[in-house]
Amino acid sequence: MSRFYRIVIWAITLHILLLLVIPLILWTISFRWHFPALLPTHYSLRAWQAIFDPTKQIGVALLNSLGIACAVTVINLLIGLPVVRMLQRIKIAHRWVSDLIVLFPLLITPLAIVLGLYSALSSLNIVNNALAIIVAHVVASLPYMIIILRAIFTNFDRRYEEVAASLGASPFQVAYQVTLSLLAPAILVSSLFVFLISWSQYLSTLLMGGGRLITLPLLMISYAAAGDYPLMSVVTLIQFMPPLILLVINAFYLSGRSYGIERAFAL
Amino acid sequence: MRVYHLFFIPPVACIALLFVGGLLLLVLQSIGIYGALGDNSTLFSAYRYLLSDPTFYSSLLFTTMIALLSTLLATVLGVVSALLLRRYAGRGSIVSLLYQFPISLPHLVIAVCLLLYLTQSGLIARALYAFGLLSEPYQFPALVYDRRGIGIVLVYLFKEIPFIGLIALSALQSLSSDWESVARSLGATPLQTIWHLLVPLIMPAIVPASIIVFAFIFGSYEVPYFLGSSYPSMLSVLGYRYFTDPNIALRPVALALNLIISMVVLGLVTLYRGVVGYWERAR
Image (cartoon, rainbow over the protein chains, first blue to last red):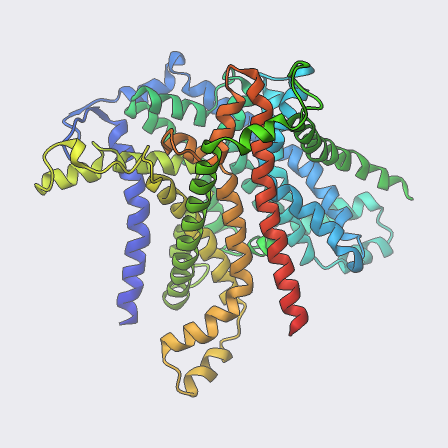
């Protein structure tokens, strides 16, 4: 009986995912698929060939999305790691200060801060470019980076650092050879999380980039608005790639361990 | 003060500049002290404009309903699915990983996937036609771009059920199985064990997670921007529309609206923490 339920749960989970993806795949190879046909009536590879067509902008959008997300991830690490280390040094009695710093940005909607920054950036003439988009994405992702890193560091045993320091390691050696190498898997997961936040941004990119820099979400919505479902589906499928990579990493390298990420969201 | 402490200064300055600076600019511009408007504007006119605008109230109601409904459904279904997964699959098992997969998908990607099903000529309408249940696309009820926001809620459910489920699963994992054995040996049925034992034990993890979900949905803008109708629209979409309006005098209104959204969320969390603190002191 238990085996039966096991199979049912497997089937439900798998089918939900397949039901999401299969219509997308069908749309990418369809040429004509009008109501009320259940399957495309004419097939074509036009949408897949469009990936290599510069006028369709799919390649450019992919490179822009990847570049921006990588830059956002690096900036998040450069800001997040030192700040979380600093928060760790706050005494237990003053924990509310650290709570405030961690939670406050998470609860202010990112768009509010982005709109606040917009006029300042536009008066400095740094809107409508990649830098402004990166700033907006960092605003949207940094609160998550900090709250996840803090949960990871809470589980970290500081005594490893003390041992290394007492054996004569410099602060940089301790940070690099002990702390970072012990926390590497957890930092990898939080980096992927932040990468995905940047990867999925739409409105902040549109606002800060002024539509001049096209990313995959922007392209997807513009094809949706134009009613070009085959091209919209190709762009949507491309966006499945990083989440799939994360799934594979999770399944094979981290074997489903969580590194305390879900504990991060305990208020 | 050691030398390497200096390395903490730039990142802290970045955070201060982005978040404190951004928020300060938001407040100042919404009040009208600083910004694009000429000299004919008076202080707080944006707030007076909003509070006298019926669209604001209908959007506030609509946003609250969408966020509440999505959060409640996601919490119930997330906890139920976590209980099932714990019973019939391990936490690190492949099926649990697949279950968590939508968490990492962009909201708009899920919105596009559901769009292919929910439009009036979408796959559901085609399936109904194949079964002879409708003969023309317009007979299918509008589930996207609709005034009830059904499409919006469905997209949020796809993302937030696994999120709540993940948190419930890890909370369940940290419980000792002795609890259940004791309850069962005292004669509790499986359902009684779940309702009177497991659910109260994981509540401290679930409630904050639902508040995060509510806060996120209340302020999020991409899904309602893509799948919502023009009226009533969610507050965030209304704000974006004010901000990009050719009439530049509406910009402070957009900023005031975003400040109000943040204050509602912040007030809710403060209230929750106050209640929890009171409850813990009372015990």
